[in-house]
Image (cartoon, rainbow, N blue to C red; front, side, top):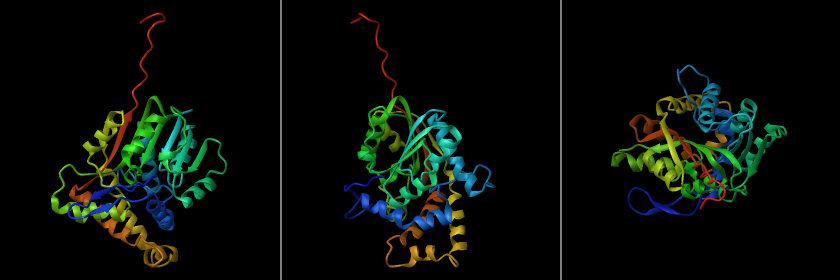
Length: 302
């Protein structure tokens, strides 16, 4: 994941800075206990199709949907952009026999991922800014970005994905977007504050995400709205959090200690829950393809 220093207008009034690389890394380091102990090492939404799935089943269902859209199979070379604890890569390597290189900027996530993988040769982890990833051109068959693009300079990040994919390679993004027609009164109290508290850049609409992918050179094949299936994530997370709060000192320390900057994240959960219900926030899976190489003409042709 990556943050830059560009500025945006906060709905009204003075512009405010976008999250920096340090902001995003510190957020995930500080929230480490909450994410893993309260939710799972899949630090992302779950996908509930029936409503009866466990958290583990729901988060893995989202991973599987993303992997299917990316065409990941045996021998695929995959890059996970903003990989968190590496749980997505571990599932893909184990279930689909593919090779995965993962990028995070959180030292705590990186160390956890390395320890959890126990030297699996199909997995490689990089504690590194995606904009300076060091991968060769055309190195990967598929790229996935699960709830990470929102922290990034999206245009620059997409250009890097385009560069490292082979011609015909697929990119799948699973992330939050803004609703198509958000009333003005919801923009500042819901979207802008949620973005600030979660260290996100201003959310594009689904159409805006399509436009950004096209501007980077991709052919967009599908943008699928999964809001109904994923919005159960936050009520379930809150319930699990409340159950742990009385007995888990680590969770209480993150939220109430002056040494941490993430107490506002609890408010962000409430805003996201309301935003989903009002339609101000949506969750989409966007699938795109780097155009295949032009076929070369027969020898001797002009």
